[in-house]
Amino acid sequence: DAMVIQNPRYQVTQFGKPVTLSCSQTLNHNVMYWYQQKSSQAPKLLFHYYDKDFNNEADTPDNFQSRRPNTSFCFLDIRSPGLGDAAMYLCATSRRARKAKLFFGSGTQLSVL
Amino acid sequence: AQKVTQAQTEISVVEKEDVTLDCVYETRDTTYYLFWYKQPPSGELVFLIRRNSFDEQNEISGRYSWNFQKSTSSFNFTITASQVVDSAVYFCALSGLDDKIIFGKGTRLHILP
Image (cartoon, rainbow over all chains, first blue to last red; front, side, top):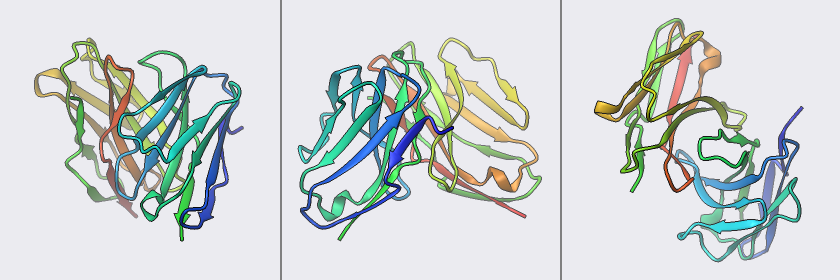
C-alpha cells in the first residue's frame, strides 16, 4: 500500500558517473519535493514541482537536475556525483497548500565511490 | 529568515518514562504552520501533527501531546509512558508564507527496554 515509492533503496555510483533516482506516487498530489539528508542532519530541500512548475532552491548545486514527466513520477538526476553528494535522498508529495502535510517515501541511500 | 532549533541531539530514556522533545522556531511571518515528523529506522518520515499559528490549543493524541506557546516560540512534543517502538528520530518543521517546509536537525530518541 506504499503511496510514495522510491527506487532503488540503495544506489552505489562512481565519482563523476551520472545517476538517476526515481520517485512515484499513487496519491495524485500536485506537489513533489526532493530533499537531501546527510547523516544526523535535517532534510534539506533541493527543489520541488507545483504540477509542472519547477522551483529550484537558490543553493542547490547545478549538478542536481529534476524531471517530472507526469503527475505520478519525478526523477532526480545527479550529473557528476561527488563524494559530498553521498546522502539519503527523500522524495515527498503534498497537496497544493502551504499547510499540507508531506508524505515521504522511504528514501534512496546514495553512495559515491 | 526562518529557523527551527532542536537543541536535544539525542535522548535516552527507559521504557515507560515520559519524555519531552523541545522545538524552538523563528519566523517573521504572522501566519505559519508547525509540524512534527517521526523518522523510524526504516527511513520514511511520518507526519505526526500540524498546528497553525492562530491555534495555541494544546493537543493530545493517545500517548502523544503537543504544547504550543507563541510567547516563547516553542512547540514541544511529549511522549507519555514511552515504548520501545517510539525509538526514532523526531523532526520539528516550520512552513511560512514562502511555502517551504524547513526542518530542524532532529532529536534521536532511544527508548531502552
